[in-house]
Amino acid sequence: MDIKAKIEEAVEKIKADPSIAAEFEKEPVKALEKILGTDLPDDKIQPVIDGIKAKISADSVKDKLGGLFGGLKK
Image (cartoon, rainbow, N blue to C red):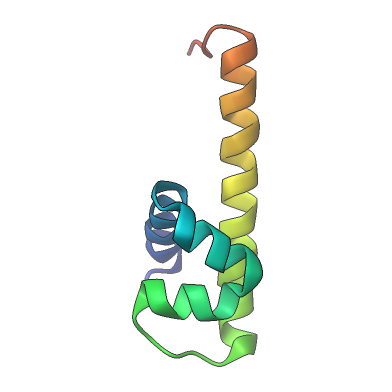
């Protein structure tokens, strides 16, 4: 399993669907297992959950900064 690809997939699904986002916030393990379609031990899935939370947080900050400065230029 490509963890980075799974994190990206989960982030996109969570950001696109408010009901999945709410479920992820309330019960991240169950929500992620539903998104990935697999049942994993909590100790194996926790690093993926941490990665998803970090990615969502980073994307949120980037979006806010882009709005403040009219978009980030490369």
